Image (cartoon, rainbow, N blue to C red; front, top):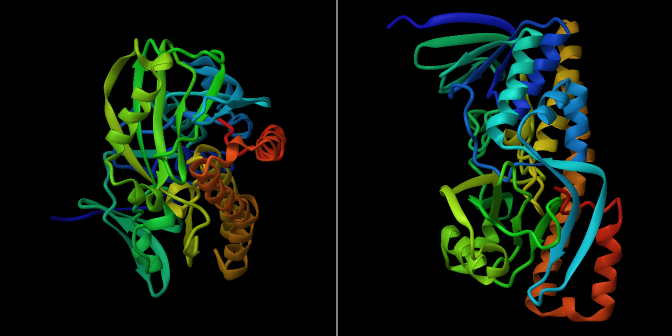
Length: 383
């Protein structure tokens, strides 16, 4: 079979938030962008659906914020950390977050990319990247090949870019796992605009959540690092059901909407390079997921913006995406995501022992946690 050949200035693989945002920014700058995705839009994505205030600010910068707010959503004005004895610490967000189903969020950003001029190709499963020497020059599917001056991998967990970098899919402390469920008739005793995060004894290096309902349907779930998950000896679905059973005050009247769904999250800081000659990785493909909370939307949008800025400079110069530009991209991602993620990993490990040893009951510990949690700079469970 003859393989169709196509070309563009930039090839973006994956049209989720990271890929579509990068494509939108580049196309708006007049760059010829091809955007590939194996699905057809609108399509759903398993997720907690939370967008932080910082993520909303990036959506506004992208020009998609108003469209997101016009669709189905719930406001998140407060966050609560809850402990096994029922005690909780409440914080208010100066920059409100939102709960937005991924069906709507991803389609809105996809529409922004196409409106800017990016050419979307749906139903395309990329099989491998094309290389000339050590430089990535395109990608190939079963029926077509795409050539480009620069490739952005935004295809999430198990990215097609990993073989180029010589690494395998993440595991252990570099991997997060999660199980989520949508449900009606959940109760929210702390308020309908509060994102609740439960630190429980059987969720080491993780937590459970109940988020504000969107059109009467709430998102709830559990999240752990793979390292913590291995300690539990239980399935993700069982951990979720145990969480539900422990909180009849919230879930006794609930009705599930759909099935329990699970997914994997490659966690920051990335245990690998986030670029190669001719190639940049963004979003989950680059392991840009908060290890403490599993948040990835802000990280996807931030890395998309950083990659688009670097790509624009690379396209303007004859030597393209050189070592200096790649290093700048890595530094920006390290400063905004990698370094804070190391701190959050340490907090995550400390939280396990504070909960397991009931140290959270001690007044000095509780006072310290309350001080840190309400600090604007802490933001560890920001929805």
